[in-house]
Length: 174
Image (cartoon, rainbow, N blue to C red):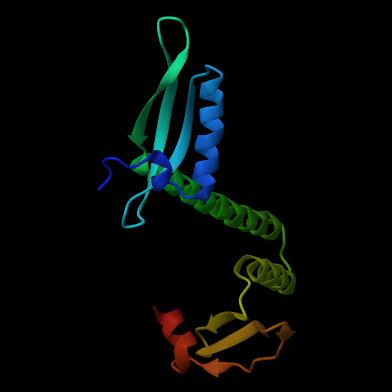
């Protein structure tokens, strides 16, 4: 399927511009190494590393070019995975930074209400959740209290509930 076809038949417009620019460098006698993506007949994209050199005759006249194309598909996949992992690591670092800030702030704080306020603000910042609450279980009364409860951007007063009712009870029991 590829015999007798020209390189440009396997390139999209962006890659044609890259190859054209590189061919200009070759006409000036320059070697180059660059990346280009080839298109298979089924439209699959194959990223390649091209190493190209001009060819000269015995009198020093340019008579053509020699190019070696190396499929770098796996390298590109690894680069994308590295970028994804780096972004994930940055996200985790941001989260750990917030948690560290909470621990530092709370370590010197003895006022329970201030601790709840600070923890809730930090959790809101970290989670950006529509509904967020802090539930505390009292073993003696078997009640769950909600010192902090927001829905949307509104803080609401949530009444206490008896342990055993609802999802919050199940979570606290697990």
